[in-house]
Image 1 (cartoon, rainbow, N blue to C red):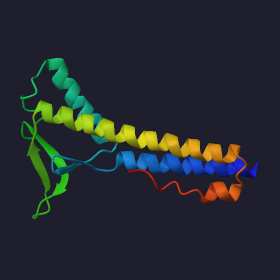
Image 2 (image 1 turned 180 degrees about the vertical axis):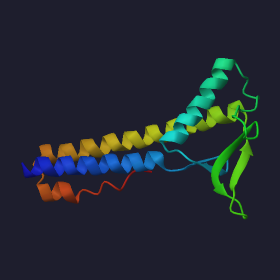
Image 3 (image 1 turned 90 degrees about the vertical axis):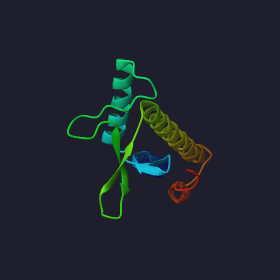
Amino acid sequence: MAVAKAVAKKIAEIETTSAERQRADIAFNGRHYYADDWATKTIESCCSVANNLGLADTALIRVPPPLQPGYWMTADIDNAGNRVLVQMTVGDMRQLAAALYDRNGAIWGKEVIHKATVEAMAAAGATAEQVAAYNHLEGWT
């Protein structure tokens, strides 16, 4: 029973680490972009609207007023303390969405490996202390 509890706790820790890494800002084309749930959904929506309207990769992204058409807000801050805006095309946004998908997919893959490792440890007879000592913070990159 102690081993099962240790496995469940370690898996919860792995899932938390994975979720934190998936929500972390993402570097893309020399800038950093938010990648939390809201930002990810907004990036996906922007791509979906572009697809639905048949916009070419060279078209500027659509943004609602009062924002400047074609500009996307980064997570970067300029010297005056303002968020940096960059002009983005539909193609740029699609590439950002793909980079986010690839990054989060790789993180999910590491999560699966960590979980399988912990479960294999328990199946091989590891103690609760050994499971608890497993360093799930390594191997994500």
